Image 1 (cartoon, rainbow, N blue to C red):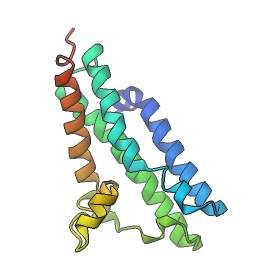
Image 2 (cartoon, rainbow, N blue to C red):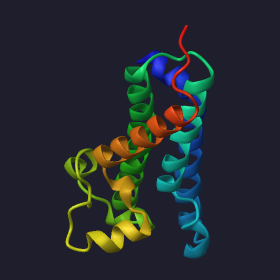
Image 3 (cartoon, one colour):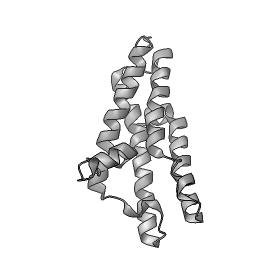
Image 4 (cartoon, rainbow, N blue to C red):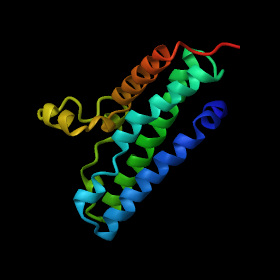
Length: 154
């Protein structure tokens, strides 16, 4: 696992900065229009493109390594969001993390299957599900690698 953490170290730092910055700004009472622009979902949809570019330019391993590297920062991000939800509910802070989901939902479907699923998808709320984000990030990374000529081999 250490290999994948080292491979995605920059991405893990970015994810941490995004979650901590948004949580801190919301605790400070900054306008919701500003804090909504700091979106972990958007970041998780950009990171696989950069990882795919790295896989196509330097030797990082095969498809298994790509999947596990994407899974590493997705798990990290959703884990941080889960911690923010716990902190928010415990201290009753009233941030946007107050309507967090259960651990089971974060691990599998999140709020992906709720009644108002289409409005959530339009707003980009994929990040409430580990499974959905892992699939999306791997597809984006795979497309980026294939578009740039495939993975570099040793």
